[in-house]
Amino acid sequence: MSELRRPRTGRLIGGVCAALADRFGWNVTLVRLLAVLSIFIPGPQVIFYIVAWIVIPGEQQPEPVQPSA
Image (cartoon, rainbow, N blue to C red; front, side):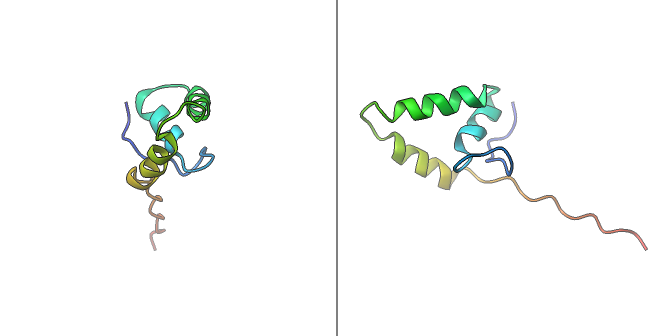
């Protein structure tokens, strides 16, 4: 299992589904499908997604390597 971080690549809207799939080793397509299907069930799913988008940190951009002189 990896750290819970929203990836810089491979995300569609906010990267929440990709982050959860990566963290728990699940298929990202399945997580996205379940997230979309959950919208049709009454509840605070959209609010949860927005909060997760804010709370889950994004991946840091790698530091550029300085060539040695």
